[in-house]
Length: 325
Image 1 (cartoon, rainbow, N blue to C red):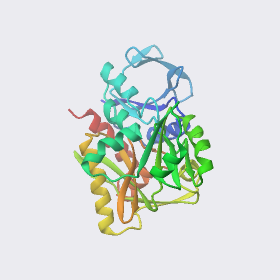
Image 2: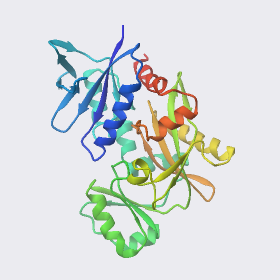
Image 3: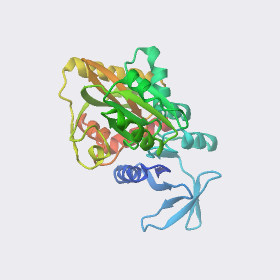
């Protein structure tokens, strides 16, 4: 019997349109001989299944079922493609755990941890994972500009601590740009992380569970036409994404091994995509995405195809891993 799969997409953040693209890509490529797929939009005020004719059918939040044409449908698994809250910060994972439905991304604790950039960096530090010098701010804190600059230097990056797709990020080159940059970041989150600028080659490493083993995908080199890998560079074609990356075999193996180490130490599940910058020859960790983009423009699907893995097999592998005893 075919497994009923709810593809969760949308979300409550600025990334919801990107998530819709990812979810629709999964819906398109899932093997219909194995899975009965449903598009589930998770929005701030309503959750609903979108039928083929675009008719919305409300989800019963008590048990995550839906009634279509008089028949109540229960799902065997949820394919989580929500970027940002609630799919990437652990809220959806915790809810699904409570109602007893498997899902394809990591568990709720790991999601909450990895969505918080500054907490994640702090947790990884004892494992020897290199990262940029950083400075933390909470909304309402006094902003001591000389102290910040003394700590991280210029240029630096000001980031919303819990946001994705480069929302709330500014590259600051001069002292007078710092305060306006924090205001931009605070629009996305009430926590901010300020990081030193790392000059070097930026790469992205996808890690998946493949046939029961942790596997690092081919590395992608990112060359942005803009100041950094911002929203335009990621989604509007203002970057080159080169897979495999133009780095040495030794560098490739090293950054893949670090990405796999992070995956294992954090007890991750599903897909992850970790970003690094080779600064002074050493890979420095930037962040981890636990529900990485799966649309046509996204990096992880490009890496899978470079590894000879079809999109149908890639997406199916996440479901089978989630359903495994």
